[in-house]
Amino acid sequence: MRHALLWAMALALVAASGNPALAQAPASGSSIVGVWKLTSFVRKEVGSDKMTHSFGENPAGYRVHTPGGHAFYMFFDGNRKAPAGTLTDADRSELFRTMTAAGGTYVVEGDKVLFRTDVSSAQATGRTLAYRYQISGKTLTMTTDPLKSATGGPETYLVSTYERVE
Image 1 (tube, rainbow, N blue to C red):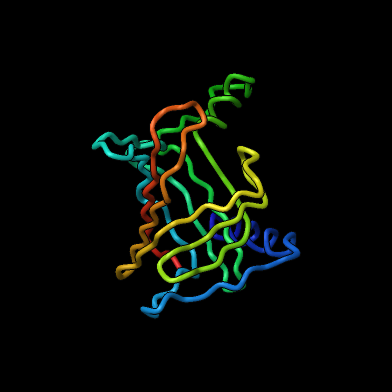
Image 2: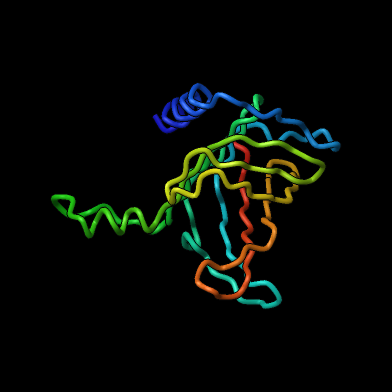
């Protein structure tokens, strides 16, 4: 069921986008194309050892890269609890606070993935995120360039790790 949902979302994303980017494999021959299961998501402060597990120590989620240059991700806090009884506005707020999702197009340039968002749970569309990536066996590690804080806090970067599913 999970795989069917992921593929249905990937197909919908591909069908909805009118300007696909060209996906390329890095020089090493390892391809980012596929379905990747999230195993770690950490926000690290630039110039410091401080880090935050934004979706808990055991996050849940997937990232998908298609051969045609489309990508999407859905991440969830691994400790999310199902609401007890009827879903309230407070429940909805908590569920939204403990997840993120986005979709769009990507291109690979050397060891960088440039991901341009078309849809986003935080409505951060039209933005291009740059990730350095590395594939080692079945493990994908992606690290963003430093990001400025919207609240004026310190710059941070995100490090996400995945295991290849397909």
